[in-house]
Length: 302
Image 1 (cartoon, rainbow, N blue to C red):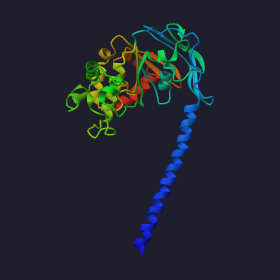
Image 2: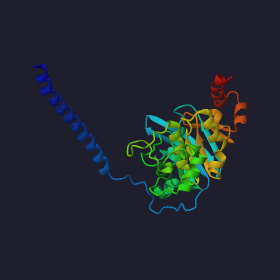
Image 3: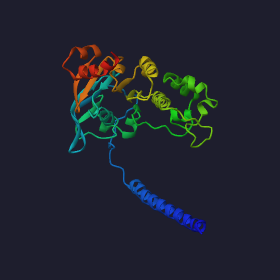
Image 4: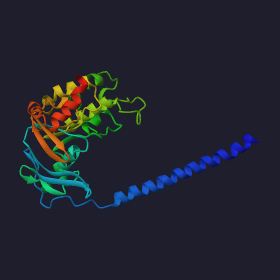
């Protein structure tokens, strides 16, 4: 009798679960389609300035930004980044470092002040063309479940030689050469049972290789080595100048030891630029924020 009861009730429970799943999916899809039907915000200049062959200097002039009026992230921030300069940005969590990068890429627009590129407000450039100037590796990067070559090139028609060169620079060359399918290896097994589950560090190197492949005049790296072991991190930094060549590079890190390869280090605190200089210069200010953070990290290695 109990077996008959179970055989009768189990299908009912399964139908109820499926019905609940369909209901949740319908509600979610409704929100997705509402979003897709929304008109895009007018963020494009009427007579955009051409970005062809553009590099130049970046200047932040009294920039303010907040996700809402009560939550100000960037507070009267002013700074200059010269063409070809490599600068490291450090500071406590929540200081506004990543937000500054997103403002530069026009993922958000400033609340007050302006950002200039070659003396021109970045809002006057065509938005899509302007974003092509930047190769970016964010903390929350994403690698698609396609082939390794397609991920690096961000294209269905990758240049194998260029892809391999970029992977070598990112420290993933030997790993790829040991893969049976090489650049044709699928990342994860989502679309191919022979796909490879790469480690967090390997995925991060893939994202760095993708930024190199893009060949943009500006390279923006936001915690690009957080998932790497110390030796792999050392190799990336040792070859950093070679990787970015003559491009303008902005690098964000919480590990102060990894910033020493940059001649300029900018220190953020509460949405402001409070210090700037070389590692040696900043350590001379024993009352400064950089000295405080350096000592806090260095004590674990002494």
